[in-house]
Image (cartoon, rainbow, N blue to C red; front, side, top):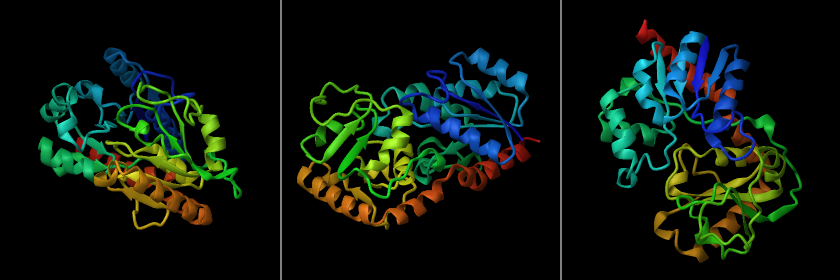
Length: 317
């Protein structure tokens, strides 16, 4: 089929540095093409141009990968669905600007929604009054071929917190952990850039160097379905995550550690869990790499996206 994917129009696709949504869109495109579909990316902030480009392409399906464009959806004359990557989607108490500006429009328009997890689907059901027929669970994927994998990492005794440094990610809370290093665009004045800060990584640097660490840390107070965890698995790393960053993960795995929110401020406990996870992960890289295959983009597209698109297309006809 012909698929149009609508990006935020904020930065290029694919991105050169940070930009999780942009790299997700690019890898989704490659996976769809690998399965024989034709894909065009529409990446402009101008709603009129979005509609013009979609109409010129005449797709079979449109996937809007930016929730701010929910008001554009009624003007799309083709089967479509929209995805929200908002980190606090499962926590209405933290919606602030999002509630009146975006969530309200979702409630009014009731578009088809591709939900990144079952928890997010439940939120649309319970908080926004959506019917199941308009909701589809479609997790994120990862392109495994992008990643270098080392059997003998250079820094097996070091952990990496790889994410944009901001209030939601909470990096500043964990800077006293001596084996924990940080990389990402810094937007948090509380963060000390003089403490084990590796700067902002390009995508190429991430693909080639993530594998050299023992494990990955992500202790945010809100996430949808974080790509960086899938990238960690693709590079052979285990993960230590907060409850809010554990969507779609098999938490019975020894290389996946979830820190309860009630213990997130207990730095001694967090450090101990990081070290235990790192030791297990270093000894079980093959198990981690095998698990990463569950999130390979071609599999995700074939198992989740294509069936969801077909259901919406059938209903549209």
